[in-house]
Amino acid sequence: MSGDRGTRRSQRSIALSDPDGIESRPIEFAAKPWGSFSTLEEGPGYKVKRLVVQPGQRLSLQKHRHRAEHWVVVAGTATVIRGKQRFALRRRQCAVIPRQAWHRIENHGRQPVVLIEVQHGDYLGEDDIIRKQDDYGRVK
Image (cartoon, rainbow, N blue to C red; front, side, top):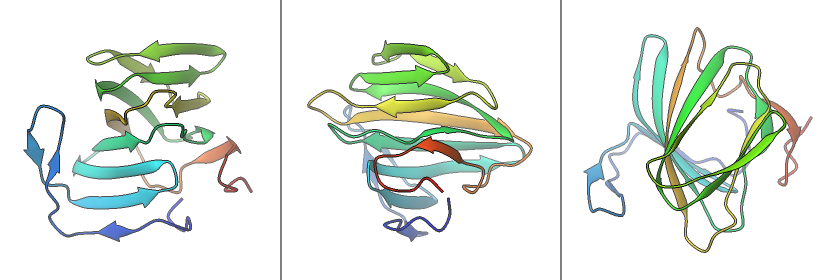
């Protein structure tokens, strides 16, 4: 949600390096209790983000009314919850998260998990998050 405590947004140009040394300059950066995300690009009906999930952390168990997501892991190994499924995603592997599906990313490893998330739908705002469970007290 846009009003989450601990969220810092910046329109500054911050260079981000991936494990291969490639840099990108995000249009938005937000620190989260589980790590951070950077918005890399946004256009009509889509948004591209870079998520970093720190070791031992996980996102809330959530779903979205208006968007679906595609995730590609670029570093680390993510544990993905999608509906009743639980599976590992390693570097260069991907997952599709349909609209309205309960989902979560967890990092049980020692290194940060970095993934690229492509959102697509008719509304892509941060307030389109319905949380079922959250380690950081953000469930209403």
